[in-house]
Length: 292
Image (cartoon, rainbow, N blue to C red; front, side, top):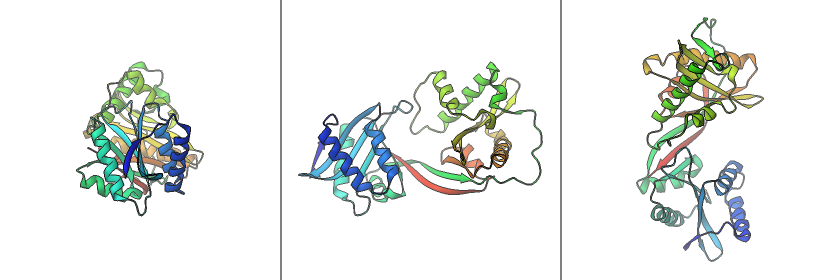
């Protein structure tokens, strides 16, 4: 076996790579898409393959991230069942030698073999993420009116409250991503990240004067489902305010006949974990973030 850096400007090389990806991932169209997005990413770096003559055993695509610039993101393609352990070992060793920054892998249960190899090579699982589907079911009783609970649409023209809201988004996200730190970004970047595609009438905040003390953001996924995005409070002593925000959003979903609300629940986020205590949900997928 030998390891080679592929030239993605060579169309023949790309065709062979795409054929390999199609063959090893088969019906796993999401994995194909993920790999292709990595190869075509704006901040893409390299492609490496482990092969013997014309037979490819494993391929790695690496890229950088604007939001998390302190590591190298890695996507691997290989035969998921009956994989070649030696090929993966060679590939991981080459990547560790190539890059000065830590390597970051985001994997699901289909990559059980790779997870085992990463663990043996002292990679640390920095985060577990469950993709949950929340069942929109009305709770008993009516939601009491709370003058401190407002929609994003209602505070949209209040500069002080909007600024406080964006700063709180930045604070909570940064504090829950310490193992893979966030870049130093402009407040406009944070504003864009929070507001892009936001359903303002179904995203809510808790306010205290001009200050936003809690928030829960909703985005439309498709006509049958919504996606619950960033959530948080300015102080964990107020974490129960999230219950009021989520209850209001669940009621909205029921009124609009939404089948489910999808949410990424990170093991490093106390706010998302708190939400799981007050809603009915099913786990649709589990992801594991490894870094070294």
